[in-house]
Image (cartoon, rainbow, N blue to C red):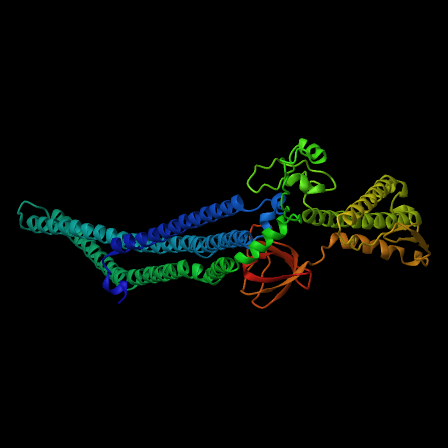
Length: 530
């Protein structure tokens, strides 16, 4: 059934129905927008919640962080953060695929509908104009015919009047003949206008308006079809991320299964074991032997208790449930029990060695840059690097002193005294100065590299400009990368990881062709370099 045939006389109904349909589209777009706002607010609250309970960077060295229950809780927070990212993705996709698309389509439908209604209005106005012309010609024909009848009656009356002259009779007959001729012309004109109107009316009701109504019907059906697809997208948008949301929930379940109570107990022992021996038995002191002066004198002092019998450890409080005062922290960690002291000294030594390695690398780069400036003055002033080189050298000497100091303390505490490996060498004016871990220096001449000095200089700074990959990842799902700053990827594609997830659910990656951008962390499996 088409509207042009069945609803040929219901123009107002069709106009009202199509307007109501457009209003329904507007209402659905508004509904989806409010849904996206709810999703965005929900995701924001989830992120804030994860951030609130997440460990601060300064607290990651706390003893509790090594417990599996604690690590699992952090994993749950990370999964919740990823889950929030998926809710944001739902909101973004709904806004793009439903709201923006339907709004644009709605404007096109409004303009098309307006065009069709204007065509209908013009056709109706044309028919009304023809009808007015018909009415005008009809009235004129009616008026002229009556005048012709009166003229004919007047001529007949004049002809029968015995007092009328022949001239009067001729004049009356001429007047009647003229009126009859005008009336005949009006009759013909009226007949022509009637034929024209009937033709236009037939075309109006059987061709023009049915065609316009059928166009409006097609418009309305396309609107309904588009709206139906929008309803489906409302569901499919969420279904698309459900596998990733399921992985987030599986990650939370996995975090719960990773809790190991026995391992946590071992960690507590490892972190808090003092290394002291249990106190021995308290000796019996016989006060009844007063005759024995030696015994008596020995008994006059303070009675010996567990603290006195522990010798060098008498300062330690071994009563299990006594309230311990907070010890004064010392640089060599002598305030800690032996076992814990060794661990802290070893940890501190590793930190110093890492810092020393950074200073050594920086010194090497500065000396290399200075050498470049000296051979190529147009590239820079070597004197401008003097203060940095001096400060770096001072830092290296200070850190080397700290290394020796902590090695000595670690040796006293019974540790292995092994220093983590670093490259203690710098470049000075093209000569390589190599230093062994014990502080001895040895100079080794290097071949002249002036012919490749520009390439060497460029290599140093290119390393700083282009970040080196810290791992790689494989896409588990397709990602369009429609937003600014993101990059698209296909399922199974391998990418280089440039920057880890900062807690916002996005990871920075690079393609083999050099394209960089951000992708959802939960869309990929990541393997970082060790």
